[in-house]
Length: 604
Image (cartoon, rainbow, N blue to C red):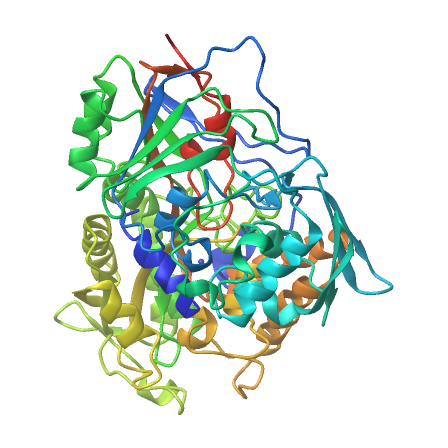
């Protein structure tokens, strides 16, 4: 996890897999991807749909009603204010995305992005260049056209001043060239198969506004000029942002006259505001316990997001015996996944795929990499897990805790005489409940967990992702939303240049320069690194499928499940809800997406 990912995690914290022996080998083989589905029992809950084709977004219908004020409730802090260059968390993008637009909308199922400011793009393998063609009808709110120079300026300004936005792309690009007014070329320093995902979701800025301000991160941007469907009216940072419809929006004006984004105290206050009709949309809620309250309202509906999310245990492989595959397999088998999802997530989650990529990422997920305990009873799982530990010679003590076979220890790992480990997690109620369930499950196989609940800043910056004490923790309980492109998995677990902020190095997983790396480790690293540079999509798909098998077999992390996000809205004032399950930048919530805002029409 890179430092900026932790910033994003902290902005979304209320809202983050792997196998090789006995029952594990039969459970995971490479097969073609199938589409994951979500079933719900409550009639007021809608499941998100994902577009799979690349088409131009629709414009408004001439006969549709217009008017009304849409109120969006949000519990986060808009730290970037009105400056998109400073956007680093989903909070920032919620406030900025109605005014500023990306080149394309990145799809959360991993499929081809939907064109937006860019109408098309292609890769020239001869020159190693990605060429992006802008929609010639796109223009800024002051009437000036959106040009290739604006695109070049935006990326170069991001890199010059070290912004979070567009930072993932920088190492792959050698130069940006304006080919003509509507065409821009990105010359690559090395092939980058994930260019559409890394580049096209960047919010584009007007050069004629920003070029003269100097350091773009220092500019307050008091009179925003964007290409989006809404114009700035007023703002009280930390309280609200008031936007009005741009009647000259280049895709056709929205049907809504005004959008007010209000900062609310917490989820409970948000639901009360929804019930009273004081807000129309809650794009995201951090707790599932409020769903029954929402469902009692005749106008309110709960919306389930299946954005890519992984929830897992990360064993510190520097610690003996967590560096033994059989131990990780035993831990994985013993933990009852359905109980975790039902209790800690109130049922709002998918059973795990052990290859890291979530089932909602239908374009890339290897759905054969299921958890081996899926069709086993609790007794069968405990018996299989105990057998794995018995085979290692780890004896059960009179206190019910196993002792390790010290003589079998890897000399480079820290040795433990008893199978007693520290489990670290941040102070989130769902995670605390999950930790208690995991603790109970592992006692059934002679493993004791000491639970340590820590604030996120200390946990990630001071303990896990820290070079000062690499063995200061044993197991991490973690979860996060991920990029739908496999480059996220590759950069986290097989970085070309290792950093403590990457998951693989942080978790003690052997990297390319580690003499303890096995042939399987080497193959996995090779496949992941190749998936970054291979622009042939068929080859890349096959490599990613096989990488998930190896990841699953190795249990680099132990996937627990894939949680859903939830939001809510009311149909009392607006209709034609179309929350396409997409995300761009850090704005991952379909309810406040541009597609949905452009689709809505007032009831009266």
